[in-house]
Image (cartoon, rainbow, N blue to C red; front, side):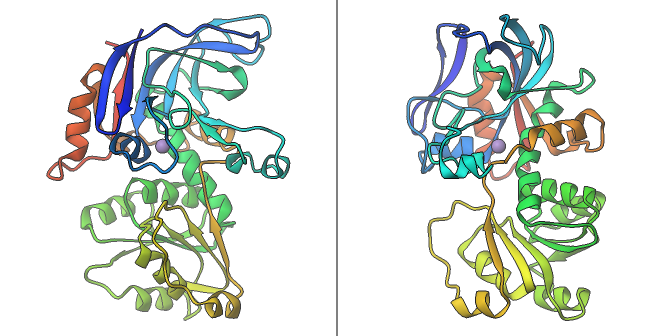
Length: 340
Ligand code: MN
């Protein structure tokens, strides 16, 4: 079978490999049909991922069809369309025992710490699979994984119906958080520098958009909230400054959700956290969000096909990367397909 391997940073190639084989009764052979290219895949390609090792078959947003099973498998059957949960956890550590397997002490993510989905076949335990409606296109089904990230952010923010949420950043991550927060019936304010993203956010249901380049963010936030600030701020900009700014917008007793991998320290005084008794919470990957998010997609409660801008055959991986890196081309989700 063919696979796409990052041999070392900036060196990516299509190689010929042994097709994987089922080794125990709970495993399933999946024929891969499509896989998304995520920012974190690009970090591994560039050598800027703090966690990846090489050589690595990347790809963690993977859908396919069940091609072979053994007697121990009961949840899926031959021919089922499935999405693969990339998170692998130990089940024994403090985090796992607290029901927080996404931050397992010996966490492994397919496509990061282990080989992932940019290959024609994968063998995974059936517990990692979630069944897709056959009406969903392969490309749209890929979007379920990014939406598990958004669902995790909303649950870490403890967003409730009618809460006001301020999402900083209206890129693909901000847009998916917006859609999940709207499903929860929160009031959503979203900001960005790029007007076209804000227009998109309006279509997706944003109650108020703020152009950071031309409007005063703090004035608007205070006006929208009777000078209280917002109960939940989500920093999807992830710069040193955006994290600092979040403290200016959050209400007393509020939550700030952080999802960046930025290593540079921000300057936050203890006092601000103490005086408002804030919760500053990280959000990583997802904690058991596939069942809910897959159901939203299967039932068409979330439709994400408009967030896909380009589809390439996987053998055109170099063209796909070139497109993503071309600053002159507006792109959203770029997907590799593994069928003709
Ligand atoms: Mn992803």
